[in-house]
Length: 201
Image 1 (cartoon, one colour):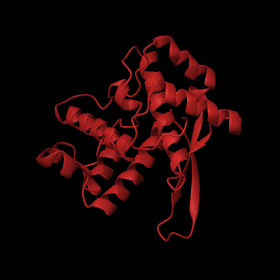
Image 2 (image 1 turned 180 degrees about the vertical axis):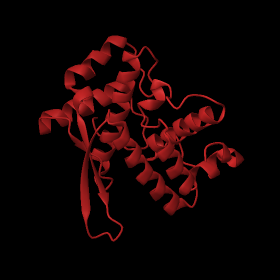
Image 3 (image 1 turned 45 degrees about the vertical axis):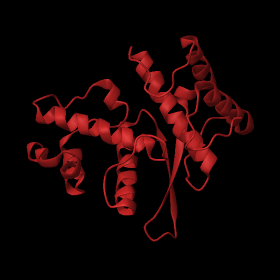
Image 4 (image 1 turned 90 degrees about the horizontal axis):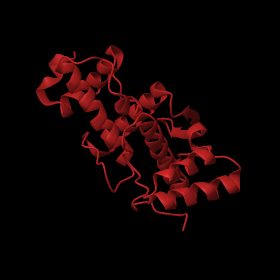
């Protein structure tokens, strides 16, 4: 079935089936990630992961999320237009009265960083900590992003370059002075990097 719950372990073939069904119904892959629309939100998350894997493959790296038995199957995603699709992110305002729509292209790393930052703040508000899970949860992609950021920050503290490896950059986790300051201000670095945050402030 093309409808798979957010907590299910989706296979590559199920992803392709779901994307084909969506494109057949809507004529495109411009998917909304509104968490009130459970199935659509989940498909949007799958789409982001599939695009990450496509870019990794183009760069010569192994995919992180999906593992098709036949590497040639990735051409199916290209033919569906996965690399060129956009995702519409609907975020509620603080007073809950208005919603704003942000359309983000996956390759706009700044847009991904800002979206993840909002997700991170919301997670901290709801849970009281930054220990975001990386499996079996709607926050899986956020958890992976957090770990990518942590790797980038640790690399800087060890004297590495601010230009992070490409697999990290595609997640919108590349660091610069402004982002380091933002992460320090919300307490993410101090909570996740323990006492090493002094090296980046």
